[in-house]
Amino acid sequence: MESETENKSAADASYKDESVPFSHITAVATGWMFDFAFVSLCRHFKEGKLDAFNETLSNVEAFSQSVKGACHNEKTMICAFLARVMHGKQLDVLFEDDTRVMPLMSAAKIWSKLEDTVADERLFKNINILLLVQSVAVCLEKGQRSSASSVLEWFENNHEFPQNLRVKLSTIVTKADTYHPFLMSFSFSRLQETIQSYLDAYLEKNPSDFLIKAATKTIQSSENIEGLEDVVTQDCLLSDMAKSTVERKKKERAVCLRTKRKLLSTKITDIWTPDMCKKAFVSVRRLSENELSLTTEKSPDTVKVQKVRRPHQKWTPQLDKYLKDGVKRHGQGKWSRILLDYDFEGRTGTMLKDRWRVLLKAHEVS
Image (tube, rainbow, N blue to C red; front, top):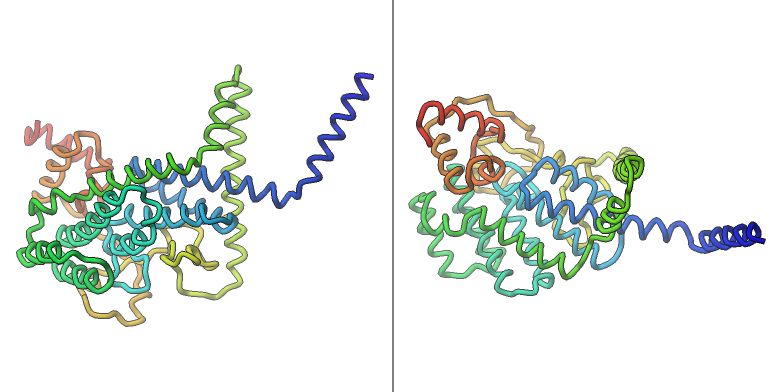
């Protein structure tokens, strides 16, 4: 009797599984994975982990092509916004067809479309101002005074631009005062912190932690090593699914002979185009130093400029000053945050740490 009951239960379960189209199950599961990738992206942004951020961004791209709904479209736009801010200090990275539109300028365009996602109107305006100020400040830090002037002109023509703020920034650009107190008060680190406040409020209002909670419960209920190994295996399977999705999209695009590529287009209806590359950071284009200084409209040939690596350079007094100022502002060991505030000419966090040790041994710092 007991055996018949078990068989009946198994049959009922099988019937219930078959009664739900697998495509519907796939859609729900993909939505969960997209939410998990979105939360992970926000975490990497907060921690300033560029490589992990770019890798997760490629997963968001893959999942976003399969999920539907206003909420997911909204999150996709936020991801596009975060990508531009994350690369905000790299003036030779392009997200737009117009080579004059640098990352933070592109971020400002997307931010204007996210106003409905911000409950605090004051927070929205603060981020707007920070994006505008830092778009100018980053150009001055790189020694691109003409580009800074071009930024002001672009914002005046394409964005809401308070007149008093324009006068203030115009004066700073004219004097090329990179370390003006006004720019320091609206620093890049403050921009990141303010955006993080926005993300915290958004995630609280729009929870995206179903998989996180489920994984946490599974780990907490694991009583032995085998249980933990199962969790790791499941995590690997999720990762493999994400990679396989990206590879599948890549094969589908292989038949297309398109040359123009965008990373997270600013169009709400077309966040990623079918001819996207498989990695988020690979699709951006780098310009030469001469092109960065130009403020006139570029010719179509400029999109073919290849990446050029800068040769290794010795540490200069100016770079040492950046390092000392960065440690003073963020503290020793916060190399990734310091890298975001200054131009160290391609150096990594490890290089900053090694240089700091040299300065310590030379008793130049304490």
